[in-house]
Length: 185
Image: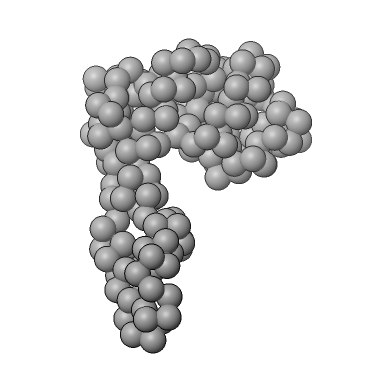
């Protein structure tokens, strides 16, 4: 068993069982620090009022890599739930199947050996196949470690984002059928 940690999720990799388990991570300490940062200055608190403070609390970015309140507390659950819904609704061959989700609190996805292709060749080919639309979410698409490659078939394992879904909906089947693991730029 391996354990990988991202910003919003912990992934338990269980190759013996042929699955990975994704669990959400919350960032309550960052949320609390941000709230106290907003109310620490009395003049600002009196000037802005409680409504403005709460508006900023729920809409402003909390800090680098955490996002806003919703992202900090529920981003991992949301990503898990989106992955499950994307897979369930589309059965797109470009996606690594997500078999089960307990409302985003726990996802079970099919295991696959992570892709080890060269970054440059991989990225150029995805850019070509999608007519540069991978730039809608380069975080997910530019890293070969977000994919598995088995029997020449490329599949995305981290697809819990609406911006990723737009690319998948438009180009997923094309990538699944036309991706060439021997591509050289």
